[in-house]
Image 1 (spheres, one colour):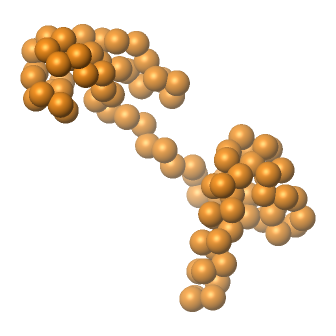
Image 2 (cartoon, rainbow, N blue to C red):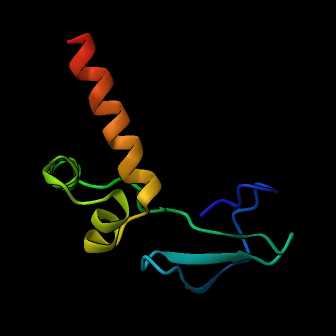
Length: 89
């Protein structure tokens, strides 16, 4: 493991886990805490398509977000992107 701040490869210690379950590391030299292999922050395409369909069926963006435990802002962004693709394609 290599520290992203100081570049050190020695004195790297395990320092717990993130909410997503990724391992955290502490660089003893510069005290930087980092995740060497972070998990991507991407929702599956299936969830996006289901959320868009539920919105067009009549659920509110907030309601769709609550059902799938995602931000309503994400739901509205996906809907906006889908509208753009429909008009361009």
